[in-house]
Length: 143
Image 1: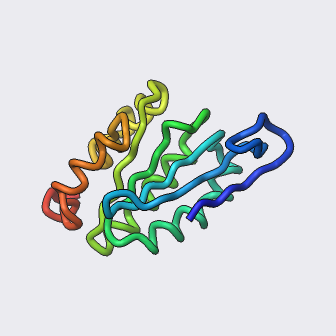
Image 2: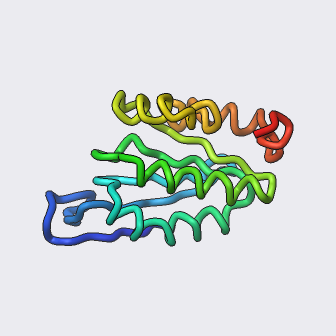
């Protein structure tokens, strides 16, 4: 499930790949984890959107979207998060965000999105609530 996108304009990523952004996905404990690496601005989120949505569509019910490796995240990234959340919610799925960066968390809290996606600082922290919430938690809580 790993995918990489790169351009020659930025420092090396994993395994020597260069690029402004890349993503990797993997299954863990019945949940799909997608990590977004690098700069997530208007241009990159337009490029990554299709890949993220394909992962969301293929996921059973829960997706953890990891923003910890993201070096830049702005309102374009918020739009991506909300689109993924809405797509999962329509089929009683759940999106959680893994994030520990102060600036990204400030953006999530300032817009109210943190109340919906409940960011966790690590994948391990995010796994317990996803399992406990179940696939229809978004509907039960009125979100």
